[in-house]
Amino acid sequence: MGSKLSVNAHDSSHSTNRKRPILANAFKHGNNSFDKRPNDKISVDKRSIEKSSGEKRCSAPISRLNSIKDGEPRLSAGSSTADTSLLCFNTFQKGQEDRMNANHFALKVLFDGNMLDTVKDNIDFHSSSVQVLDIGCGSGSWIMDMATEYPSAQFTGIDQVALFPHDIRPANVLFQKRDVLLGLDFEDNTFDFVQMRLFSLAFTRTQWAESLKEAYRVTKPGGYIQLLEVQIRDPGDEVVHTFVEKVCCLMESNDQDPEVCKKLSAVVSEAGYEPLEDIKRVINLQTHVLKTELMYIIDISIESCKRLMFEVYDIESEEAFQELKRIYVESRMDSSESAFHCCVGRKPFS
Ligand SMILES: C[S@@+](CC[C@H](N)C(=O)[O-])C[C@H]1O[C@@H](n2cnc3c(N)ncnc32)[C@H](O)[C@@H]1O
Image 1 (tube, rainbow, N blue to C red):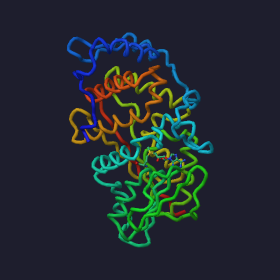
Image 2 (image 1 turned 45 degrees about the horizontal axis):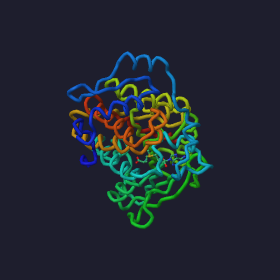
Image 3 (image 1 turned 90 degrees about the vertical axis):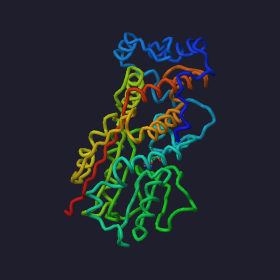
Image 4 (image 1 turned 180 degrees about the horizontal axis):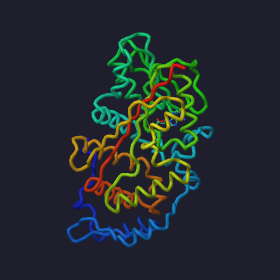
């Protein structure tokens, strides 16, 4: 997987002289000046960064981003998350299944399995009466992994985009194309365990509440919900900080909460669940055993929101984009971390 990363600061295919005008253009909107030192390390003009972040300005409102026409498929007009299609690493774009599958196995290692101990200790997944629902299942990696481990239980994955497999899957898995915000066609109190994972960049604040209400409705009394979210405000050097703040600014302009990962207990509690477990796991991108996987995921995520990057940084060429991505990825690798929060709640019996 690491071979997909192209972050070599000494890449001979780009001369330093050619980089300067591209970089100057790339960071024009943010008023940041990036340049290369003689040793080809990234140098950032801190004063212009401070000036930029002090302006607290989003250079590309979501509505403007959505007007981009490049022939790529978009979320359907009736979709509840159409407005965020560019920001949420649009699932129609190339490489999304790869990113989701890589994410799945990294998260499984990070959290020592597919569910927190509270769930594992309280549900007998070897029972044929156990029903599990994954809302926003994406490529289906989590639910197929669970279904393979527990062949007696019944698993259902729903997603508004049919990225999941249609033919080859464990026999105890069903997939449905559904939008949770339009309501699910399951009876009340159907599922012993409901998961919703990685929705920070898909849901507005209101949509979090709406989707949790629907999750609560279909959870059995005494059943469990598990939410898992990525930290958006990752720490790091000025390059990372500037990028992260631009993303957060865009999220805020679309009423999305960049800090939702820290509020998962409150989110489940507001829906009526009793929060039981809330864990944060951090991946230091210089030292952690998962650093290569995470750098691959970061690389492919940036690639998949290319159109957003063109707008936010006012860049026009593929070459400029690749340079911008290279600088960002290198900064993440040198100075940053990734973190994930996982929370479990239980629906009361009465
Ligand atoms: C970042 S992906 C995460 C996928 C999967 N949960 C995982 O962990 O790999 C978010 C998923 O949520 C889905 N999604 C977003 N809004 C949705 C909605 N309103 N109803 C159903 N699925 C939705 C997207 O299509 C996408 O597959």
